[in-house]
Image (cartoon, rainbow, N blue to C red; front, side, top):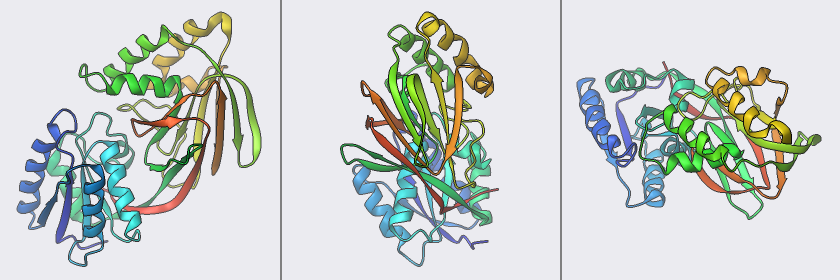
Length: 306
């Protein structure tokens, strides 16, 4: 247990098209009701916000760093906590499109006072993080799922759409991407052992079970097992679009992994390359292209949980 008397509130006012600012106002009121002091951090850009968050984590009078926003905003807070030594717990008040880390942690969604109560309770859990290193030198952490191929293309399209919200946005984006569906030759190495060398539509690497607002892409993943889960779909030219169209709706329940063309893997280090190259997204943000190495960071950060 951690005594929570003062928090630094990292706000993404633009999350979910401005919803973050309204959530921040509710959160400040809820914290005040519980007697918790609040310092609001609003950077001029992501780099400035992370700098402010790191400085807050290094201060003894701040008991927790609280992120208001989506999974990308939470990743920024987690990165700041890690850079500051990893001793300051991170609280989550969901205000994004997906909010999949909040789901994994059982943090209330669309109930700001309850999410604030979770933080004020001071109960912490150590969770794993993922880290991805691209071939061009880009390295970043991720808290939920890293997607490649068709998955990442759907994410990129969904992020660019203002409507609809939640899972419906990803469904519509997937239908649009199906039109240009193609496979790539993937090579996937898990813990140093070659596991896949063939035509693949997508491969997702999960630290949590879901992405995209509850889509159970890696249904066996756990935040506390010290491993990453991989879900991939092989490609058959005769049934490409039809098969993917049939598999995709099953992702919402996690039953897609029962399809014979879907394979699951698990390991602490996953190396993925493809020909031609494929997009890579983490926590809903496209960061570059394959090849990439995905590694787990076991028990890397403390988060405030129910």
